[in-house]
Image (cartoon, rainbow over all chains, first blue to last red; front, side, top):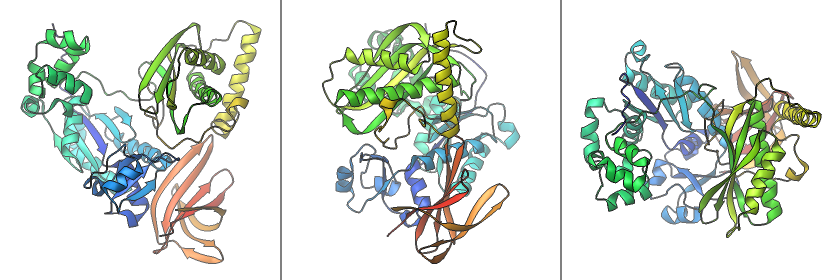
Length: 412
Length: 80
């Protein structure tokens, strides 16, 4: 039996910036406007992170290396990205969104959900809000955004996707079945190529077919996800728009890093693990949390990615304990390829507001970490750090998926 | 862009919570800013850096202003 949560009719907007990084670079440098531009990471990695619509016409795609991109478009202009520009712009965009509703969820650096259910009447309706947001973004930054409006996040995302670039589309609740009927399943947010292939093997190609598929069949092939997939096929999504500043429960704190060059030597990998552990520890301490489970994510050069977890005897936010746990996980892995990305996450969090350790040694350790945190908050991240972290690899300028203008993300 | 990272003397207005660089002197030449094409900030601890992409009509420059030291830097120049 499917569980469908019936709530009041909601009106959700998704604001999705068009070719965000490339559009910002075209504003920074007017000579780039109207030309095919590809933005790469800020370090030595030469992978296209975003390309302008002019470049996309020639087949330039995100994830291509610069050689492939130049093969597709020989007159392509390659620009090294500057993530401070994009994160600053995202933080300013949030201020625009908050003029229309307090319920703003920054989903990624270039996408935000807004729940305007209770505020749309103040501004002349959801479409008017969408138009005003687009106009204000254009006025302040000179760049365009697409706005999707729907009864939930799934449909709002779909509406934005099909209206790109520079579009505005409202898919009303009563229109959802008609819109979804012949739409390929991959068009839905959260259904990637792999799931689409598995669905196709079951004879399901469109959202309409997915919505009509027997839940038992989907459950037997996809487990608990089966019910969720069926609901997606019906255009049902119960996820709420959550503000990102303290409301709701924080589930995990994590950091990951793609390195400018792949790592193979153990001392290099250990050093980066310590740095990530310090970032996780510092952020967890700032929010007065402690976690019980440490996870280590490894991505090989081939993009094969896996995560291993270790449960600690007691919860912690101490950098060294997080590091030791991550290191012990690493010890149990026989690395088969050079490492492209590492991630450390602390989960099963508990609030420790106001608690002080019982034993003297623990108190000294806490005082040391607090002093380090105070200095780093005053003078900048990693101003005071562990000796082994000196000479870290320069970050390639990739914006972590967990980045938010402020506050803390609920999960990695 | 070619990285420069040199301190420069800048004439700017500070008004209504905004900073607008108007001209600066570099290599003995006075460069009048015709247009600010983009601006952004970067925080590092309590320090705030304000960045401006500016044009004199021919060349694009990146300027930065640091609140900690009240100093301006020419960060980079577009060569083409």
